[in-house]
Amino acid sequence: MKLNRRQFSMLALAAGASSVPAFAKGTYPERPIELIVPFAPGGGTDLSARLIVPYIEKYLNGTIAVINKPGAGGQVGAVQIARAKPDGYTIGFMNVPNTMMKPHERDAGFTVDSFDPIANLVFDPAVLATRADSKYKTLADVVAECKARPGKVTIGSAGIGSNTHLDLLRFEHLAGIKFHHIPYDGGAAPRTALLGGHLELIASALGDCQRFQKEGTIRMLGILTKERFPMAPDVPTYAEQGYPLEGGASRGLVAPKGMDPGQIAAIEKAVEQALQDPELIKKAEEIALPLVFMNSKEYGAYLQKSNQELAEAWKATPWVE
Image (cartoon, rainbow, N blue to C red):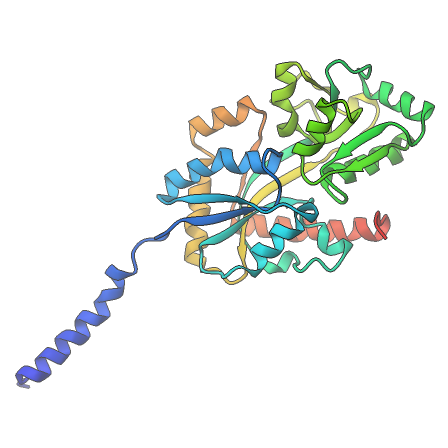
């Protein structure tokens, strides 16, 4: 078949057009990605994000801007993540159980199914801490004071329904005591209040307190791990002090529902590579931040399982009216 000049030109244009996307589409990400952190700067979730993000950028070959959107114990930021356009350029840093507890307490504007899981990055054990110059040296000291002054010993947490609050409730039940609980929004504020002499104790995360213990301003009285934690071997467990409790918080990346699976896979791979980076591992060890990778599928299963456990906990002992 012979083609005239016009037919040949049209075929050439069509062939050229079909090949354009491979060159014009480019490689993800083509512009900066916004990472919404639903807590204030300075807390464990924020510090985790800011420590790890440069290494994700390194392996993703892209830019990630950390955007703090605090409020209502993580609800404000989580809603913004859930409502974002799922174009791969807005993702979020999820804290479990702190943020995922909100839909069980009230109509929060999101549920666990509002997000696509990307990867887990951290699992941070919970601790009970006080000022280094405090009279409290052990959990036994705390229990004795709470029994002497029921409902008067002040303790701060990262907020109502946070993992630190839930751990506190379990400790109260097991020890038969009652604190004067003061909730904050995130982990940085109660630590600041403790150091300023406005609180006697904080229910916190290891990553929030380790640097301050090394500096000599905070003393951790107990850690909620099964055995002594390698990154903080001098901190006794709750169990060895007579209270067999375990607890902590996971921190991972999620996307608004409907994000392209290829984009999710690209970030997931970059996270896995980042968490194996020797430089990051060293920095994380210095502040006792436990890096724990879960891929998208594993993290999604973890979120669903945690959500079910939170629903059961709320049904058994609701803590807000």
